[in-house]
Amino acid sequence: MTQKAKYFSLFSNCIPVCGFKNASIYDLQRNELYLVSVELIKAINKIKTLSQEEYSDHFEEDSITILEDMISFLEDNDLGFWSNNPELFIPISTEWDFPAKISNAIIQVNSDLLYLDTIISQLDHLNCKAVELRLIGDFSLNKLKSALDLTRLTGIQYIKCTVQNLIVEFPIDWTSIFKSNPRIHYINIFNSKTKKEIKIDGERSVKISGKKFTNLSCGVVDKKYFSVNISNYTEALHHNSCLNRKISIDVEGNIKNCPSMKESFGNIQDTTLVEALEKPGFKKYWNINKDKIHVCKDCEFRYICTDCRAYVEDPEDILSKPLKCGYNPYTGEWSEWSTNPLKQKAIDFYEMREMVDAEKTIN
Image (cartoon, rainbow, N blue to C red):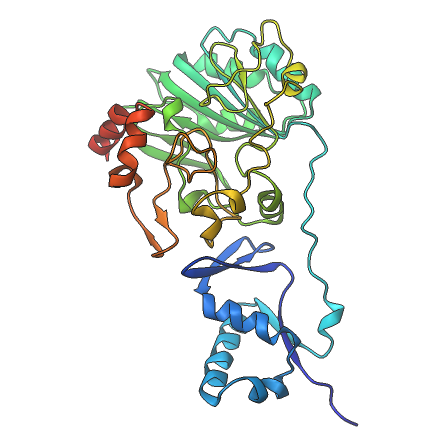
């Protein structure tokens, strides 16, 4: 009986992505990122329809040795497998959808918490699952708790809380605060005299920093914000990885796609979130994915990376690369974005000079 030929394939949850200089493999099941060569991805694509016995017909002997080393790397990291019937293993679906008009929101509010209950109620009605509360100005611990308490009887599942300035005079039992509201995942406190991170349980934490927070602080692109999973990957294939299905209310009550953007689509005092959603132009950024953005479209991280349309390298080009990204896919190198000579004009345009200089002092 003749033995069937063997074929090598990547697991369907392991997605190869080529950039201009380098490549990556996203393991969407185990949330891992592997940096590899473009040559490896090209080789894997070439042998999809070639059996192991056919390699000698398509590769030189030296190339086969290199190919076998590449395959060993993939096997050792459980990224691929040998099969007699590769046609039985179908690719994962790349479709993305969310069962609501809005998936995430940013709410800015002063310590008077004006309209916060109304905003949260409307977001709950829209089936929004993730909310970032940005508490602007001086907040006491009781005011912080009051803001968080307004989310308790809702369907919101994920809360990140950013506090511009927390006024306290005694140690805080953060564990108790997180325990009383399991929706809280992160609390970030700025403008503090101390710098530390307090782990609560799992991935939940309190991060305390001496940095100052404003809307200008948003839009940072960094490896630590990469998100390797099926939901984020499939959404990024089709939509903008930051602004898709997002709604924001700034500290003055203006309804926007992002609080850092200028365009307003009404005010929460006289416009509902549902009404704002249907206004022309509100969703214009939602479908700008990384394949449409200059430079990003040549990056191996483009489907696991965050994006920013509020602050870009060329303020006159909606498809310009995010200003606060220091990665160059043409060289494969990371650098400090704020010192890049090509970004200085945009830094001044967005009036970020003072913020950039202050962060240099803190760091």
